Image 1 (cartoon, helix red, strand yellow):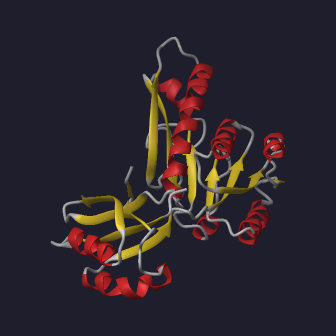
Image 2 (tube, helix red, strand yellow):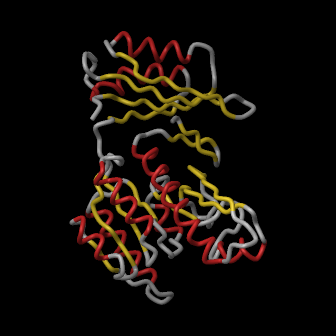
Length: 284
């Protein structure tokens, strides 16, 4: 695990931003490993991700806010700092389709996802065997139209009790309420089994089949109150033909969904994503 710090910055673009940030790190003995920046929109809004080696860095990170605040105020910055060694606490939500869950668990065991998968929540018992295999607590909370508020209350209590940093909806086939989402802004990632903004909502494969598309896709996005309208993190596509039936589209879609979701989760936990309006800026 790399011993580094990551600074994420957003502010109006001005001359000297790169130089000022780099000089701050240099003056405190830091060696910059990555410095990526982007100007977004017509107003050229500045977004940057700076990562530097903490070996030899002479500023205690608990004192970083005090020392960096004058620079942040000078340039009207919104900023945060993270450690590459920090392992976010993750909860995975799943229903009956378990392909994305299994892929995430395998990649986590393989070391590709530097996080701690603390628990799995489902409205069905089907995927419990995977949780048992990996030794992860599995909670079945059935959801109906009548009990949805109570079910979400139970879910929230679990998440708060376990200090969850990120929720991954790995084909969790329930629409979260605005109240639930408000507790975890930009902390819920969903995989939608179509290439958004096409075919939102339920049964996108059927919609795609009836439309006769030649490409199908999957979209990983942050969850907002508007269904399937949150900032898009990653997308993938696969070519289909007139010979493909709905089942073929579903089979091809599963492979795309796994890769797209795992990339989105990895980029989030590695602090590579910044939001600009309803778009994501991803420093790869």
